[in-house]
Image (cartoon, rainbow, N blue to C red):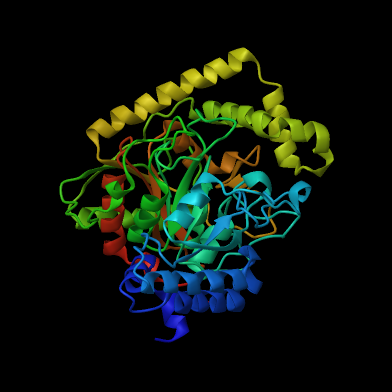
Length: 470
């Protein structure tokens, strides 16, 4: 099999073929490294790469398998880790010039789990500074570009990961999502992006171990590949008090299912959000897809009143906790939006924080009650299509001005406040050929049912099989 054909294969198929010794890990690695060499100069998705180390690790994976070692579920598969996540001996900058030359001594918990599952960490994917904003650029590495149109952004903050997966440089990748950072780039790059329930993938030791807003999630070209990576990353850990007790094999399930009779709550704008007409036009065609596979679809605009206030208050509070000291010591080196968001947090009163926590509880309960009546909520992932890469953030949607760099992603950030799992699934393309994703929200901690619904939608549309014109 030629190298180009190898990088087009799914992670699930590659893992099985390596395990059965139909193909070597080194062949898989060489195919992806060749693809990186071909397209990464255009996209700038992978910003640190250890090609020699990756080949050595792949050869060692082949030797261990030949010697009879039991392979992990990701044995021999290449992956690059988001540049917010520590990797032992490999540069991790957080997209900040302050950490331009930072090399951690130890792996973060998710990286340790990837290695334990047999994945080979080959480098780092680009991210905005400290993961702030759904547009991937920073002063260390510059911008990442969208594989479907390099003049556009891939979104963010996991934009490097989504662009690399969409372009075939990686079979899958890790991402992190506070307000939109897995789902938005997945939508912009025509791939799958899952924001799991809080605690599904433990983050490891952190300054805010009880905070349910930031989560880790997989990015992949198929729902099955996302489930494969999810299984390698999930499971309890004593350093993460929110971590769920379900074992990794909870996701070793058949995703094929009959969705007939499932009830879908169809939301066009969460009641009051501006959505670009080109996005609405694509998604309206997909309502019929659910009906064609037997689902019952009803117009519903859920009441998430207070979600914006809760999200923006608690996000700012988190910035104080994680970046307050840096604002004091290196304020001049911080991106203005990061510094602004931290200053907002410093100005919060106790009453504002208490009110945000109360609103967060009410929003969770509202979504819980809605999903007692419906099996899933369907809504836009992003309120706009991929925008020019030289625009820092969206200033206007459908004639409505956006006041800050986080207002334009409320179709995702409101869902984050609910703490329910959500997945971005490819839904179609605008007239200009730009990807548009559909967001599906599932019941609390029920990722399996959500993945099965997403897989049925994926199978019915085939949209994710349209590759970028690279």
